[in-house]
Length: 97
Image (tube, rainbow, N blue to C red; front, side):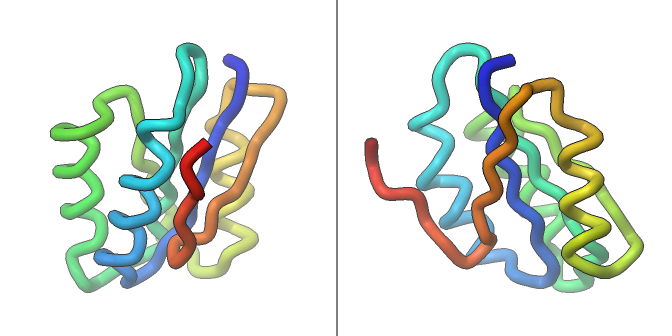
């Protein structure tokens, strides 16, 4: 693995989908995309699962029911196989390039 882009989310279905749409096309071979759902109750988990199936099958969704950004980020780091992990907030988008 070259690079992991990770985002953590909770109850921000539309925002996280925009973030994923912005970063997925920029991933290179060997990069990975990890989304950690941190206990959403608004359908975020299902929406991300559907997005992954349709747009980026190599991405992974981790469900971390214990609340808190630190717990979610630690779960992403533990799941990563890359030596570099970049975090993208679920309400941010990555500029092209």
